[in-house]
Image (tube, rainbow, N blue to C red; front, top):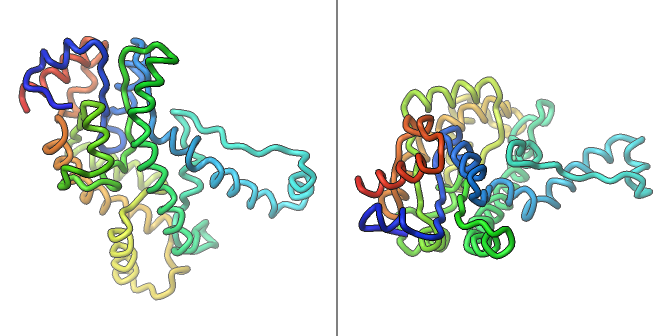
Length: 286
């Protein structure tokens, strides 16, 4: 959705917006605020974990349960039921399944297995993003919500080509929603790195970028065997590399397909009207 004036957006009877940007810039904060005002909140990460990755996640739980004789017998006799309990605020089951590559003694998984799971996540994220138009329809027909907010994952920029105006994912999103990029600050980037150092989490990488950084990390640390890589060590180093990789991709998405607002302006948005003014300002300054 592109607009010549802010009024064209603000007077729409049914509004649909996709917020995108790095982790922690305020996407979910805005989405939750709008949900309280009657907007339908669509979380891409939640859709990934509950629709397209659910069986993979649960199967991984079962593999771990089978390592315990007590649980193994109960599982084989169908005496217990194992499921994932993902929520908008707790995506730990999805992160746990993605895992981190490296030394199995430190909780790592083989690099080939890691890449396989990464490929599963890529396909799941693409399909979840392409589901947006259908959920816009369902949000109105079933839940009678006039407006729609898509809370995209931090890795959206990794599964699209911002330079391709016919990119199948971005084209669908731009045709059905207004794309709003929340641009972070240098201080925010530093904060993300420090937060990640304290609690390293699994991430999604573009395949070619992952291969290159895996080789680079092993070379820098003089490691020959994949199983000698410290999973958390690579995760922290790779995360910082990933941040610098993603910034220009998000800027190009906003330039070619949407609009940009600043992270520093998000805390001032307290109401639906405040959000609409934020978007209107972004349109006027495009």
